[in-house]
Length: 113
Length: 113
Image (tube, rainbow over all chains, first blue to last red; front, side, top):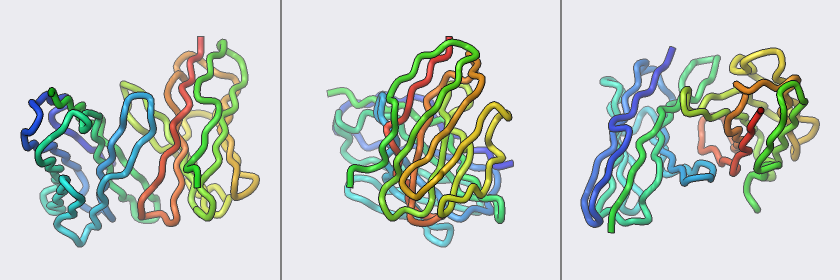
């Protein structure tokens, strides 16, 4: 059974700092990995999707990396801003014929002005 | 497009009552997913549909839960009878394909007293 773990559970940083969020998964037989953002009381917004054959994806100040063999992914946020404050969730697609999108419990990020 | 639409946004009911959650996916999306989010278990996939046909309902917790998709623009998740442990946020998401970006609705916060 696929399990996804995110560390740390919460992170507080001053504005302008670069930061890294971590995600690990137990079964390396994945199709892809996605990073989502969730704001309080809102749904999830997809930030980046990395296919299993890729090593990284970039969008603006965000960079996500994937090391499938070691079961790890990181989300790097450059020059953090208060508007980046949210919960960040990692999810992996796996399961062969029994598709599953398995989520981590997220990292609550607070960027202080 | 208005995105994925869910109703109601909040539902408070008493134990034993029937609850129906509704979802309108993004037009043209062939896949529709129902998720449940709790503090203890995080986000869990309950069931997903492809072209209105349920493909995998192995995530549905009990027979009290049922989901239908009578047409491409409407789906329901029903709980009958509801129990306090069903209290959670229920999300609907849709996508063009199984292994690509999913678009989430704002969720329905269900409280069963």
